[in-house]
Length: 593
Image 1 (cartoon, one colour):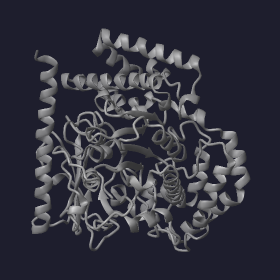
Image 2: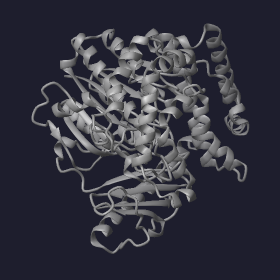
Image 3: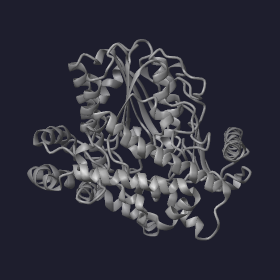
Image 4: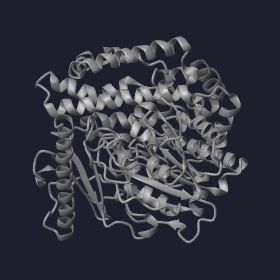
């Protein structure tokens, strides 16, 4: 069996790779891999941000099944680590601990390497603040307290696992150990143990305390592995920016002049939609804005791809049983909202020079017609360089030719700023969902090629397993791309909109797309499906960039449209029924002995 590496690059719109946006390729090494592997440029994520998107991607099924992504991957019976562990792979995971990899999943990871610390702020913003606001105007229901209790149980489980793994496996802290001293570590561990004891005495009372205290809660003090400590701002300003003024000045000039000339907006509309105007202004100085953010706390909260690649290769070299194949998963965030395009947590001038030298040709040759964020394109080129570095290191240690490598994204990105939108992230536009999928192995065989059909994120793992000659578990609902050359007739996206995925009262943001239409709904989960909840519709043959919303003039009686609507309606009903069954089971488990 071949080794398998799963590389997840956060926030990649597939139309930004290669020469699709820039005259010189943004991803020259990936371009070469595409000619040697399986490539699908139109794989649609379920949601436009990580929690919603990875639920379907890593579990091979639909995002809103089993109470969706409220509990991350933990409510699914299958996930990528379990699948490879069940197939006798030694499993390695590089991830940040507040991604909430609970004990049920963690037992299938032989080696965890943490790329950041546990950030309570993400828990507050991800769940608790929603219920805190709700509690100000109404009492929370029994169901809501049950969900919160189950989530707080999971939070403590993951937090304690983080400490346990750091103690038991020195390699797990290879990236984060230097972020805190021994005294800080002891204080935070003691604090967490004390908080957990208080929680066990009265869970409801403790939850109410969290909702009342907000970010002033004692848990917010348990943050010893602050990734700001890995970033030397003096080195950034003196050695990166200061000694590479020519590069950064040229980048700023190119972004400004190209967008001033090429990135046109309707100013009358933009004056009404202030976010649209702000986004246009940002295109004129995206690199300057990125540089400004780099001096602020929380600019990056996990390791650079450079550090992750090095840690991954070290883990591969030191694994205990070299007779077994390995499965390794890593998740890098450079193209995310706070975009980065060099190794911000490395104080090595040679590394930075190598990276800027790799990026500079793209600044010089992006093309006179370029528009959008060149900073974003540089982040893709930085990823490209690190994938090349990984391949070279695997070659050096004799593992490349027996390793299958998957490269994909969790979701797309509106931060490419082409076209410029009024709403960024929480929208239905293709750039927030359309991602690339590339699978490479030496001498791929007859399945090699470009698959131009429409595919869903849930097809990713079945495709990878098929290429790795492994059985696809029945829990996976996706279809192997290599068995479906023409693609799906349509793809459905589904998530709970911005904020907390409350599947009791909030609206389901659900859309359907084929090659002719995209139709989207915001239908409250506790109401019947109704066409009045249609919020957007686009005729993609006439309006490829999805600029002209025709939801009010859409002919829903048209046969093609009617068939799409029926498919959405059926899926929406499945979501309602599945949610009711999950909540009933949660209640029964808690109250029926």
